[in-house]
Length: 508
Image (tube, rainbow, N blue to C red):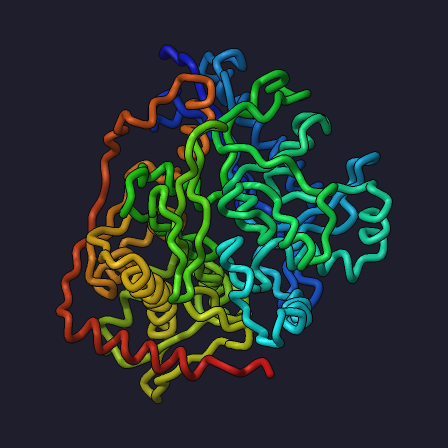
């Protein structure tokens, strides 16, 4: 047996799975963890839901199983001195205050049913401008089906029990972090943090509070909203189960947690997370940068209730790993997503071709924000093989990342010299080399893959005084440098842009 010492737990609740990880306090060393998958429900095309009760069941199971593994190592629950939470953002849950039961399934961030809600609200923009950026000066976000306020407004308009509960003050709203915190504290704490709140379109980026102008625009009541806290403070105490009385001391949206876990704590540093979607965050420090090129202004983190907030520019790609799942489940092009690298490499030996795939299954996010775009594959010839489609899918992730980097360069005026990466897709070394080649910058990946969980643990540890952000964790990394020339890189990117043009305007 080895000395366990103080541990910080990190609950990483994502779109496809949840996991609970125990870190040695003040370090990136993982002691033990447990992960379980989460199911998605697709009632109609473009609709994506999850059962909030299943999310809660999986969260509790991950905690219980991790504690069992800790005890098998000779540890104890007493070693766990705090936990932090990182969660899928924008996903929207409304629940009954008396029973604690959800009044509808969670509307997942990917859900596109609110397209009609966006169209309706655009009609209400003053001067009949239909400007989707009308609210950006307040919240940093364009009117898009992506964000929580649109999902909440749809629930109000289309689920009578929710509209009635809002009117009678008998329900609460929260993103997934709030749902988890409320349940783990037995209904004693209804709270969120500034990063998750900044993704709702209801928080003012300057005041860091719910904004009456935004609430009035969306026609939503303030009384259903959680209290906004910093990312690093004690939210409350777990009220039952194996972690009874352990403080919840940190909370961030998963992408911001990955930014912290990657130690992008200085202005000008950036990370990209490759999961179901792909999310690139660029630390802009205390300066709130307004994007003129299709990016989002968001809160990166706040390290305590009395500390200044750090902002970020963000580019969001809706479909990254989800495209690989589509190749397997929707098209049977591959039998296992773990085969992707091997299959894509076959394309190099059979002629590269000029095949481009724009996976706009439900529109394009940053920097285009085109909800009427749909997926296209262009450049098919009689020599096209399935391996070329697989490679084009990986390249699409890289091209969309370059789209965002190009926009960030224009908005911030400084070119990124290296891109820190994390997420499930980064285990694909072929993809990482493609990313370096197609962006022309060095790609850096920490060997310890749990950046999102680490960020949540860091915030929780800092809140109780056992983690120093100034101390560099000095984690080992892998690096990929570009090996193709600028001419080839730029030619391929120009053809990608042509393919994107052909993806526009299909959902009319």
